[in-house]
Figure (cartoon, rainbow, N blue to C red):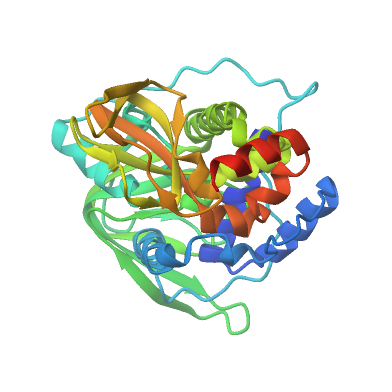
Length: 367
């Protein structure tokens, strides 16, 4: 499975679980059959436990935010349905793509930014790609009575509401009765599943008060958002390949870790890790530079730039940090803690044991 395919699978699992009621376990079984990856002793098989215990409440809050923004909470679950996404190959060549640019006021750009910032669909974007997405939203003026999307029809647009009011209705298959299940107003969005799947609309959305929508098509989403996510994961995997402690990992294990990395931003002069403090995370510089200092007159002992890493021994055990690392200018890091690593792949020691010499060298450092 390529990185791009893995990204689609992860996005499909999360979106289906949150929005459609589709059992992501079926997708997990399919992936395991395709890869036949070996189980690592001590690693959990429960995907819901891959996140750190300390972050579970925060993750649940994020999921609620996604649901509140993009799908009415009182939608009924759809019957299970197959999902698909564009595939490119010998008979379906991926064409060169230039993102469209539609004029907007600064206020309109802010409205769109605020809406998509709350969606996991766009969380992999950096500032440059985020601006490209915002520019690609196209204006759509609607009046009272206009039907924006119709239940059962295929769709390929995500809609953001700038002004106006809209009702969401759903027809019962059993009775044929159409009931209102939700409503939308400025700052909300709907139709996001069309960006991921070729599947029928789950409900009908109708304008009840004249307003303005902004819509994003699937092709633009595929080329901007998914490509950006693929490039970022490839970059993260490249970072992980440089970590001496993880040299014995295979490509699949690195891709799994790349998906688990979390970002952290630091301002100029801010302390990232402090000498003497116990640590359970290791860090990789994604953007910017950092400096390491030792107390006791040693002064600066190391400079870090993009792709450099520190604190990797924290993946094995809690031990005092050997130096203080400070941001030199604004810095963006990706981090991974020991608990998350262990839940994904088992104890680091088991990976190190694939190479006896490296295992002995590293274990001497943590005694």
